[in-house]
Image (cartoon, rainbow, N blue to C red):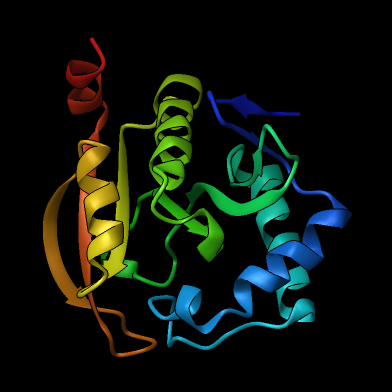
Length: 180
């Protein structure tokens, strides 16, 4: 079972007891503002999401990690790798993504978690390129992408929700030169 540790976080696979705290994150309209059409999700929808994320681990060898605060054991949200099927024009691709509850914003935790997941993707899974996709206007996510060494490569429209998105990218070669 894959688990990653950072100075403040444990990135691990999902457990049953993660459903309720993740559902609380997904029920916050401010957290969900930049996700898909901005709709919140309930516990049943969250459970379905976690099951899908776990299935991706089994089929792809990577997926979304539950992000746990080391000092408290509290679930902060998720980060990790997934295939961005919702945006076919960037495929084939693997996307780095994250979602943390508001109490965990502004502390660098999303960047810390995402950096560990990017390292895992390049160093453990041998990926050639990782993308990240955000809705235009989500400046906080774009700052994280920049901190990860990613650069914008295109702006387009999410075909399902009609919202403008910006695609960032980092190649394994670019990653290797920034980690030396």
